[in-house]
Amino acid sequence: MNLARICRPVADLRTRPEGDRARQILMGAAVEILARQGEWCQLRAVRDGYTGWVPADHLAPPAAMTHWISAPATHVYSGPDFKSADLLSLSLGSQVPVRRITGRFAETDQGYVPLAHLTSLEEQASDPVAIAETLLGTPYLWGGNSRWGIDCSGLVQLCCHLCGIECPGDSGPQEADLGTFLPGGRDYQRGDLLFWKGHVAWVRDPETLLHANVHAMAVASEPLQAAISRIETQGDGPVTAHKRII
Image 1 (spheres, rainbow, N blue to C red):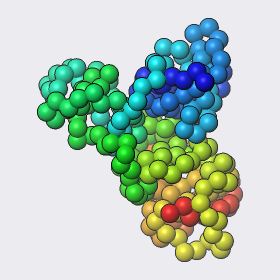
Image 2: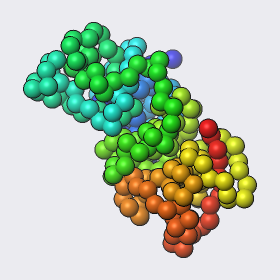
Image 3: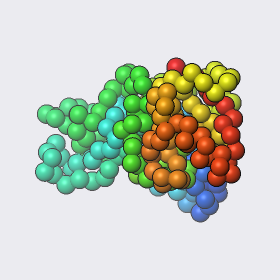
């Protein structure tokens, strides 16, 4: 197996070289190189099996990741000092290999990351909706998986992964694979998922949804029943599944 890792803050997984974005993959993610075509590599994400093409310069040799970014976003600095130059920004869920701790910073192969924004890979979040709440206001982006832009299934996948829940990248497989089907459209609990054709949303509480959606062009909350009515009225049909994963 020809393994590598993503070494850019966010990489678009494209349908073909120079093609459309299908999904995104974050810094530190392990990938398998399937093929090469000029300056492009076809990849399979080790975590979820998603495939796509990225530029070869988005890849680095494998390394043992030790921590994940647990803030919505962070900066990587040139030195262990908040006044030093910021080199790049990383999204929630990115992974880094920490070499040593220097004061309030962790040294990585990309630079220095504030310790306050890092969590050991041995520690997982426990509430996927709490993760989603930290991303409220994030712009909607088709195929997005990061703080800089995210779509409905990207939001579900990122929040699940940070809680140790295996999750496909698209809403159709998520509906098929995640949790237990609940009939009847009632008994909504925090952490449930509602699915439509081509869309998915978290239940924030029994009366509220939280989802990345085109209506708001952002990660947003809205009244649950109002959202169900709006989505059906705009022509996207009724809820196709209510699933419980927690």
